[in-house]
Image 1 (tube, rainbow over the protein chains, first blue to last red):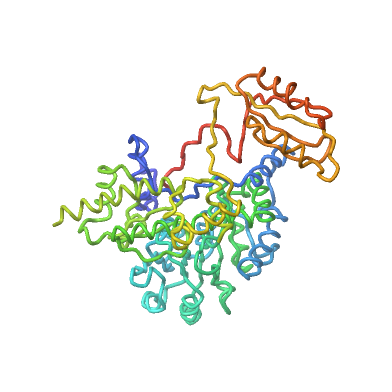
Image 2 (cartoon, rainbow over the protein chains, first blue to last red):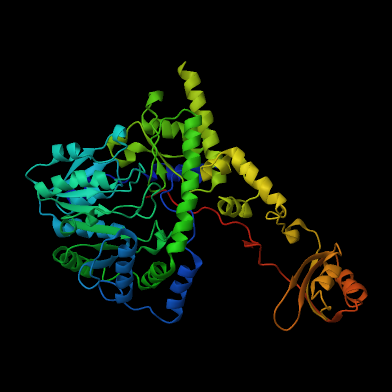
Length: 390
Length: 159
């Protein structure tokens, strides 16, 4: 029999995040700091609207681009929160989570051989999506000393005549890093100079603890080069609803729509009605959750400081990215031994790119009690490693 | 600052003050001072425990009693409310708008104990015109807390 599989897909590695999960779920009294989604339930009024839409029999396809009212509300929301404006008619597309938007944006924009700049550590799907779209991923290794922000020098050094697209994953999973306005201005020049396009994954935009998130699309000259991707998963604790969106110049959105139309049809109708409620009456929920994450973030940083674990202060998402180089172990070895010895799961930094070596991703999408228990165990573990190293 | 402290301890009065201070980005001493001040000002009126007595296997009966009363000259409802809330078996007394005046909640060991209180004490008060006793059959949610077993964390490590 012939090989049924394509070369491209067989060469793509499976995601490294799940590796520990299966062990954790088997292990008694294991706790996890590994999850990448909110611990809050979707606010009830949002769930209720989803249920109500089902009761009313709203079980048909919506338009391919998504419910008109929802697109209008997303437009209002983006303007109200991040001062970017998009036409709901021609510059917006409701997708099956931010994930679908990443995939179809790459497929709509890349020709074989086009280089895609992917700053790492970052979420695991950019590289595979670029490969599946025929692009050539070019990794930019972000540096701890820059708090894992993308600098103009790093960007300039990575650009070649074949570079077409820059992925901008901020606020960042797994580092919690953010790009402030000045950071974005510094790279915007180079983007313009080299005629690049930007895929800006702003799924964590609501979760920033320094200033309000700035979208690169709000900078002069950038809107026409940017596909802004976001969604409801992290901001409104709606991961399982699979609902997100992409905004961008009409020329790009129109082509993305073709892929979406043929591959997906439309985002789930129930989720769209729930998302509509989230956009209309959900700002308060977001503020409450942000405040709660912020408290936990401060607690986490305090504990790292107390145990002498090096970690830059993350100002976004719900992750911290402490450095474990002092122990002379790989991230994977540390995470494995920590899980076996103390029954706490964390994700090795290397799951997000090889430059994550020497770091761990610690999620604080957990209750204070859970965080406390897990960090007590981390403190013990770190002390034991230091004792052993003496 | 006060509102933030209150909104944390309203949900968890046993929170470690050190942790609370860190989470709110405040000094521990100032959190403590604020708490003491709020206790003295009567803003914080107690630190109670929410108990599911059913689960504990202890028989308890709770009644919501609607009471119609005659207000007293110069004192309105306050005097009669005081007469009622001074009974230790009374849990709460609210002045209510609508078809009756006071809502009294009462906790006892048995139905008889409660009906005795209503007939012997409550109804016997001069100002009380009538009472209507409603017994609670099941508590679903109390003080913002659903009285069920907390859900397990079913999240998967994948994003």
